[in-house]
Amino acid sequence: MAIPVIDFSKLSGEERANVMAQLHNGCEEWGFFQLVNHGIPEELLERVKKVSSECYKLEREEKFKTSTPVKLLNELVENKSHTKIENVDWEDVFLLSDDAIESEWPLETPEFRETMTEYRAELKKLAVKVMEVMDENLGLPKGCIRQAFNGGEDGDINAFFGTKVSHYPPCPQPEMVNGLRAHTDAGGVILLFQDDQVNGLQILKDGQWIDVQPIKNSIVINTGDQIEVLSNGKYKSVWHRVLALPTGNRRSIASFYNPSYKATIAPAQQLLEIQPEELKQDYPKFVFGDYMSVYTDQKFLPKEPRFQAVKAK
Ligand code: OGA
Ligand code: NI
Image 1 (cartoon, protein in one colour):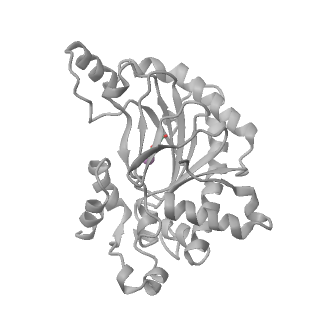
Image 2 (cartoon, rainbow, N blue to C red):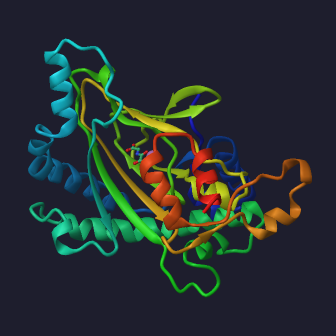
């Protein structure tokens, strides 16, 4: 079993209806799918891989050796303990955002900032296209999801577009720690540029963990908790995790188009109106910042109590 692979270039051709149906199925049945021919220049993707790997080698690798997961694992091995580590991830991470200040960028890697700025602008455009596909497939007015993330019709606040650059270095005891613990994503639409070769990302599908197969220069799309709420449960956020592996150094670059912290999120009115009584879901209306306060503490737990917690606010 493999997650759907969808040729995004065919969205503008005579196969449009078919591709729209594939995208709907990807959202509704899988929560994860891969786009090929997505329009991001290969040449740019090659540069992104190059600067990310260079940055890891130059500015991150040495620091990872003294990081918390490495220390914890060393301690357990010294104590001959076989207890699995459940409170940290075997992952090196740094975050980029539109308003990142100078000191937040890795500055020792030539062309990192320039390349990633160009990449993020392209990915943001792709995110908007994907959200418009979701609008249409859900029967919502064009721009509806984007508008909700940007503060409604007045659109006076800005959605958050972030990028998380991760590496999952080889792990000597991969059975004792997770690369990234299982979770659903908090936000809106996530666009992942994962390693060509090293696997490790898995999603939970019908009670089984299945691999998100690496495909060179594809972009993996998944939907977060906010799309689940907006779609009134039609597009559910899906559990996923990253395994720690004994060899390879997996690179993955996740970009997320999320609501502004000030945006109010609720099921789209149009969907509530058409929902038959027996299928009515009970999602709350809340301010996204409040959701994130809950998520910070509960990321690796089921999402339903998070919805309940913000409902009560
Ligand atoms: C995440 C995530 C997957 C990956 O950052 O939320 O699921 O492959 N990342 O790094
Ligand atoms: Ni995730």
